[in-house]
Image (cartoon, rainbow, N blue to C red; front, side):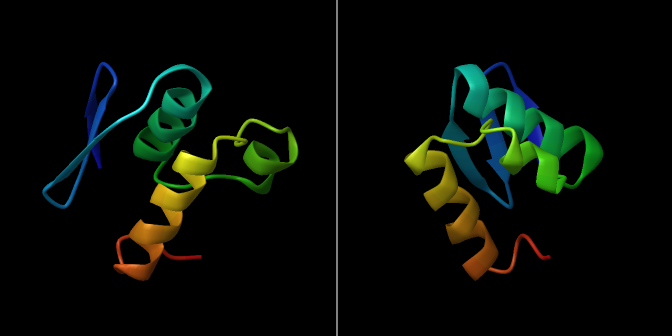
Length: 64
């Protein structure tokens, strides 16, 4: 996963997120994982972001 400003690139797909959602994706890109606390602290409340993470999981781009 790569990012530039608010654009995120995952296996040829480009998505754009801003504010807190972008912060979560930048954490994922930098650390290559998200901790349970990233979800427990209500950082991830954007339904579109959650759907994107789910879509990437279904496509095999993300694992648990």
